Image: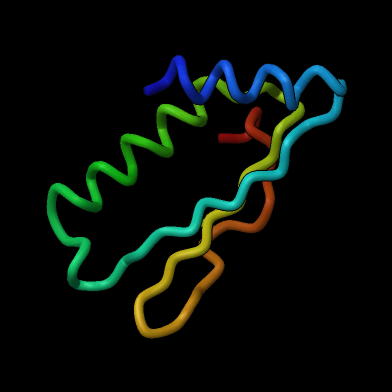
Length: 77
């Protein structure tokens, strides 16, 4: 799966600009256990292929949304 993400990002990154990515994470009770662990593993895989120009933000939601992390550069993670 990482190879697929990486090949798709290469075309976008050729413009020399960084990416702004928002990770929207379902934190409701239905996502307990392995489901939520899979989400975090996917986020980690994406973080490993981003460049230092890229920025990420994290928003969680259940019955309402909450910004967990405003945009920060990947270098700060």
